[in-house]
Length: 173
Image 1: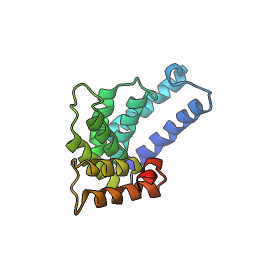
Image 2: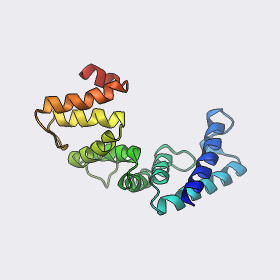
Image 3: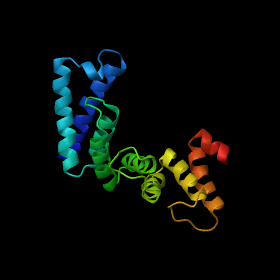
């Protein structure tokens, strides 16, 4: 089933990542056998993502953003992160928020309300950078719903990020 395929794709992916991390290969210059392996792994992630597997979609988003095993393609990255985010992957949710906040794609307008929505979803699942972003958005009066004063709500999110060790959040509290 899908979880078995996910486990196998991850196992094979991490073997390739390990080769690159150890300096035994480079993403842009994989030997033929590794390129073939990468194509198979990418195919497994694609199949899973197309079936709605949130983690596989997020994995593809990261691969396309960073050029790990595939050519950098921010449009593809955003497409897969949107699918992963819609299916609940917290890291994809953060990445979608980042695209809306920073306007990283020509076809995606900066939309701080939309960014705030995705950051909040990720922050609620414990993503430290999203928690910091939600606090920063709230203090500026952007997007995220809050109860009481903006300062109190922003502080709540900064504390969550600070407790995970984020230096800017620690400074903010």
